[in-house]
Amino acid sequence: MKRRTAREKALQALFQVNVSQTDPNEAITHALEDQQQDDFMNMLVFGAIEHEQELDQLIQPHLKNWTMDRLANIDKAILRLATYELKYEEEIPSNVTIDEAVELAKAFGDDHSSKFVNGVLSKIKQELDQ
Image (cartoon, rainbow, N blue to C red; front, side, top):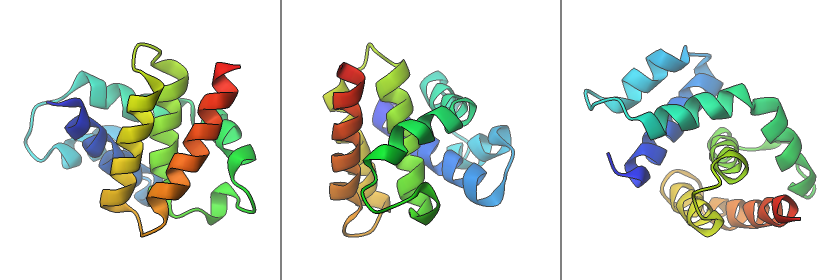
């Protein structure tokens, strides 16, 4: 599975976990739709779930006039996945992670999601680079 597809499927699974309180393994199986399991996808989903509080603490300071509770569920899931990738997957270039998250926001978010996601992740990247 290509990494772009794995990120998309990971987003779908994480969204399901966050919104419906679905078991992560069940959400992954549902998102895969009979495709084979993917290690990268599993790592993103379980990593984002395992580190959710820490990720939210990294994201929150960069949400000008917003709180995590007020974010659209899809934007929250995209930010968590990408922030996990920025923080823990050092072999993946930060710009690739941000570009992929922006593409997910364009595909699944509203008209403003991509700019919002790009802005927040750029600030998180700067913070992590310090």
